[in-house]
Length: 545
Ligand code: C2O
Ligand code: CU
Ligand code: CU
Image (cartoon, rainbow, N blue to C red; front, top):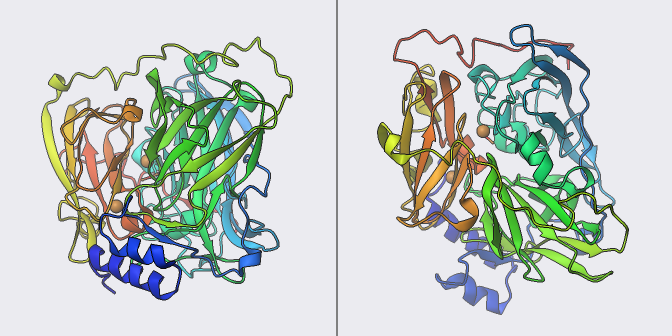
């Protein structure tokens, strides 16, 4: 079925919401007015749970996903580096997300979010992913072949979660991760072709934290280094997660989850905390703000630490982007409550409680002040090689347009369909190894934003609409928010690996239908590709699922 063009889809959506009686009188006027504040659609709820069963904001305790420990440690004979060997098993199970209901999920080791991997720069990792899922998604009926992507890692193509390098149920695959990059917040998530959205929504997403000495000495660690995996979900009357992507345009849940818990409450001590915020939502973008309007201190972006601490009162954040922020709780009184709010952005569908994320309650619990990061916002951070790149060293400038055409999400009039039909040969760009290039990405539409992700590289945002990038984006990135009517210019070096890598929109229904292309590094047309993403390291048979 071909989905209607986006403007129509949005209109249909609005009418559906109006008919459902989700909007009050004010809401009706607002939704009809094209220039309504954020241009997002407001409605009461998307879930079908009876009102009294709906989870309530700030009723559940904050929790963080458990760490994943290595099964064993070896040494790579080729370079003498230690190798940590991890295993996760993809399982279909249930989890209590809404009190009183068991929601079917598919999770790494059967939990959502999956277990967090912590590792040091210079230590390699092998992650064995065992697919023990049933042949079809128990809720959506979609195929459950998976491909695991470590988002933020310069992995070889055969270990990069190439969409068509699918591991079927009853099979497993070893993914090799180099971990030579600067410290950063990564995440591993499913990337299976055409069903990434259902797979990730069902729970196949988890944190991966890469550490290095600079990051260890400058930023809070351990119990003060907190992952926030933020997503949104909607629920059917029986407690299963409803999946409505509005004709592949986007899924908008009315329940905000932080680490899988609806609007949790976290107790904090009167010191500085570091939050690694990952928007793992399929489609929703966020605009964070503290209810006290105190600053969020940005110290890291997708690819690692920023050169300076960047204080902002609020900032926008799309799916798959990671921002590390410090929050200073030392200035608050015991018992004070601070809410992390979401001001939303254009073209999201907002519900009654999507304007809030979680609550912090300040306690007077003791902590050690010998840790320099406890009470002082750090000074200068490290120099990142990507941020030091000179635009004059670029040997090529390319332009791409992200668009909706012929009822399909496309990049430059092409989609993953063209890549598949070319037997995976067609590439959008083919830089030489170590080439520096400038890519300009344009979104002419006023109806959509697209978080564009380029695999393998970190890039520097040179400009946004001809001006400087937004304050919070001044760090190494691998996903860029290409907002309505916006043009961004990126600078990057294609280094370390040769081979084919994906480029796609990280709104997952867009990615699946079919807003994804690939590019190659250091390969000429017809060259043999020793890192062929589908041939070089195929999955192997495991025990039957
Ligand atoms: Cu986070 Cu190609 O993915
Ligand atoms: Cu990625
Ligand atoms: Cu998109």
